[in-house]
Length: 142
Image (cartoon, rainbow, N blue to C red):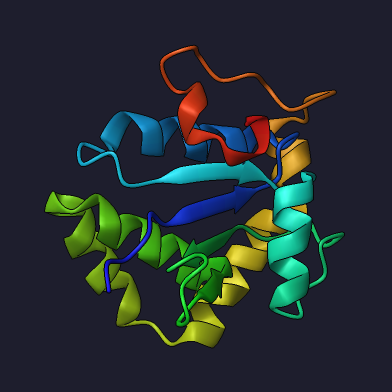
């Protein structure tokens, strides 16, 4: 059974999260990733199916094998590792290096950044609109 595109669920008003999306768009040479803001109906449905709280905007999620029997959700530092690994090339090496650290330590660092992300990276009044060429990758805009 073929795998579906990994879907990044991100805080649409967070400056850091939007930088992550732009980074992935630039480095996703295989056109694998799709996106949806955590504030969207799409993200709400997916997160509820996995018992996650849609109102929790302090993490990024990656949905793997969406709409397939083995659908699963990666969050926090695990989501970052999945993204880096999927980007391939040198990013996959960075993902492997991060896996050396135990999850509790990676998530501690992740949570520290997440708590301060609006203060450091800013907050938008609404989710930025992607460029016309990338719009098809955003599932919450379809």
